[in-house]
Image (tube, rainbow, N blue to C red; front, side, top):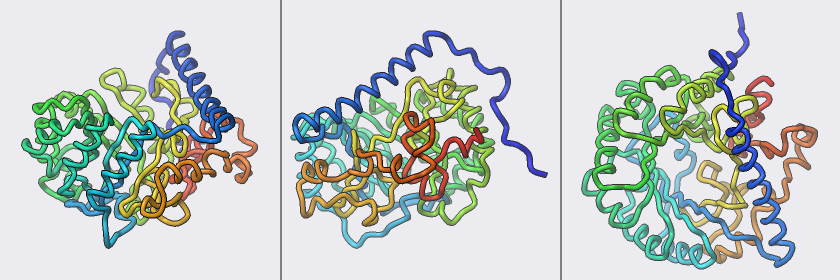
Length: 371
């Protein structure tokens, strides 16, 4: 017998007037950003540069995780050190402020440190996302010297759960050690990233205690995305998982800073319970991604296919790609082409949801939360 998804657990937390006002202020600030972005283009003919650029550095990885999204493509070649450094110089020259590296496992690139050092020398804030397995004490200090200001490590549960999901009996021990190494090296910001699935939703309370015991102040929990190996698994089976996840965040966010992914840009009745400010998909407005072989797309989770490709730095300057591409996001084509979005009263909140979640028809917050 089917049952309705669980709603808000316990007594609904009281939302202070100050919290409402702060959220409203941030929402107005976001609205002003979109207007400024559009007005600048109308007045000058050019779009403001992205503030945040990610580099999808490699598809190579030392682990074989059950939910891996990076397994969705394979490449015969990767960008050279000189090509990446030239790209960094380009984005720095137009006003980008942050350069972050993901993968695959970025630490498998032997040139990662000189590339990050180059970005830092040009005034860019830098960060990496890693599974932590290769992040020993020496590497942590090398990253610190290279100017890295933010490291995100993956941890999906207690030792048994994490090792099962990562398919490696040492992976939990290695990431716990990596946390200690980063703290010793003095990395300014350390974030733990967790992918929420049916396999680990029950272990989140125990994982929260593990993070607190290890001095973690920032925790990012991301609902499973329908890419890579996750397309072929049954790790995310029910809408009730999302309710459980959001209830957990609402109940525990006072203990450490918990954020949910941009793949859920609006959360309906949960929005003010789990967030301090509105979240939106920044693709084409303030962010984009450099792919393994030089193609530019919106974000690392998007399939690196022609459908999502905006151009290649092997054939065009980055600024040319930024100015001429990303029309589908900037022109809000979903509102014009998707009948459901066209008539939805939540458009201004979610702007059509996440493009990657849309691939599995899991983008509509009304349907996900049964609102």
